[in-house]
Length: 101
Image 1 (cartoon, rainbow, N blue to C red):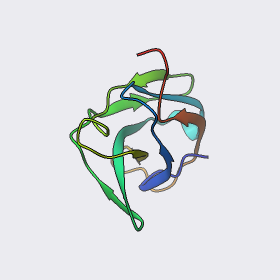
Image 2: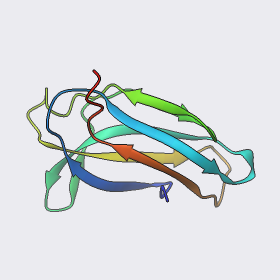
Image 3: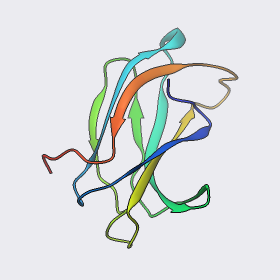
């Protein structure tokens, strides 16, 4: 599950390719916004200027990110539900590298 309003688990990057994310389900037809951030160690994440993407059920994206370009080697997902959504759950998958550019 993608934990909205939180930083989703970090993964090591192996190249500067785009990250991959797919939303399999989203409760109540809601949407969420997600971006790739850097994991800088000790549980600390840093915004590296990566763009934010919208997701609904069935959305698949290759997400531009600047983790390696900024000198970091691990990435995480920051995801937030829309305004006024108190509680929702999304399921899906993500990878820090797409291996396809």
